[in-house]
Image 1 (cartoon, rainbow, N blue to C red):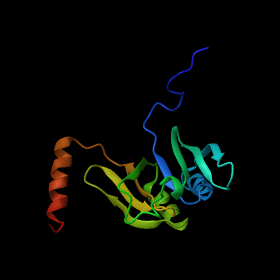
Image 2: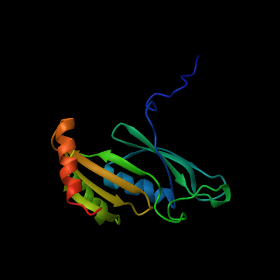
Image 3: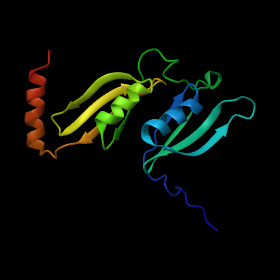
Length: 158
């Protein structure tokens, strides 16, 4: 029997989040996004998760507890915000944003109609990770987006 070098269901880019209290993070993502837990791999000698996987719709998200001894740090241990964010399209950006805040997330940008046709919002989850969520409202042509961007940035200070 041969082994598939790319396991079924793992053929896309997979974010891996390092968090403090991965078990709580799994519960948070289940509650907020309806995630399904796929697996937990605890350390053999302590009550932390070295690896876990959840599925949001049909996409895998991997996560694990921080481990400073191995220089695996969560955003809570780093100075400043993480240099990346996770982006997810959702059916109701306003509802998901409101739920995220009610579950302890810090709002960064309330749901806003954007020039590229999405209703878009940003928040920081209780584990320090930055999320952007959006609901597509209108399919825009490149010319419409360019005109919208020019108008948007005209209103912003330099």
